[in-house]
Amino acid sequence: SGTLKGIIHNIMVKAAGGGMVSFFVTMSTMPIILGSYYEIAFYSVLLNILIVPLMSVLLVAAIAYILMTVTVNPLGAIPALAVKAILAFYKLVCAALEGTGLGRRNLGAPSASAVIAFYAILIFICLYRGRCRSAVIAGGVVICMALMCIRVYSTPRLHMLDVGQGDCIIIKTSIDSAIICDCGSSDENDVGKYTLVPTLMSMGIRRITDLYVSHYDSD
Image (cartoon, rainbow, N blue to C red; front, side, top):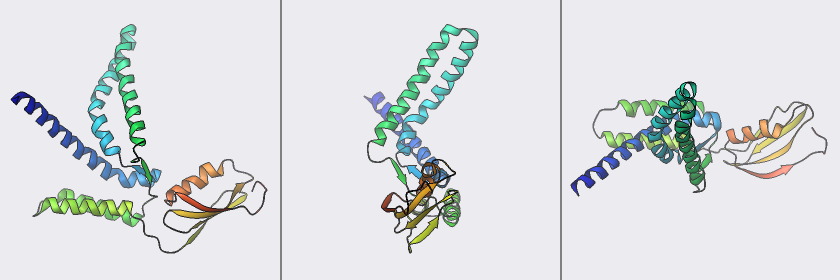
C-alpha cells in the first residue's frame, strides 16, 4: 500500500511539474504564435503534458531506426514501429481534443505595444523574489493572458486590400465581425485563400455579416 501511494505521489508530482513546464512554454510563445498564425489552441497545455514525455522515446527510436537501416536493415522495422505508434497517438489526441470545443481560437495578431508589455511582465514575474511571490506571479499571468486574449473595439474601420488588378474592401464592424465588398482579381490567383483569409484572421474576424458584389467580372 505504501509503495503504491509512493508511486501515485511521484506520478502526481511529475504531472504537476510537466503541467507547469507546458503552461510556461504555452505562455512564453503565445505572442509569437498569435503574431504568426493569428490563433492559438488552448488545449496545447494538456497536449504537451501527454506528449512531451514521449519525445525522448521518439528521438531515441528515430536515431535507432536510422542506424539500423544503414547497418542491419531488417531490424530497422522495430524502432520504426515505435515512431509510427507515437506519431499516431499524437494525431489521435489532437483529433480528440479538437472535438472538445477547446480547439483553436482566432484572436488576431496582437499589437506591438501588447507584445512588449507581455514580455516585460513575464520577465518581471520570472525574476521577482519578493514578498507574496505567488500572488504576484498569478496576477502577472492574468495580465499577460488579458493582453493577448482581449481585444478592444473602438469604431468601424475600413481596410482596402492589395489584390492586384481588382479590389477588396473590409469594413470591420465589431471585434470579430466584418462586412466585405468584392474580393476578386484578374491577375492573381486564389486571393481569397492567400490574401483575404489571412487578413481576416490577423484582424481576429470570425464572422462575415454581409457580402457585397459590385459587378460580375473576375476583378
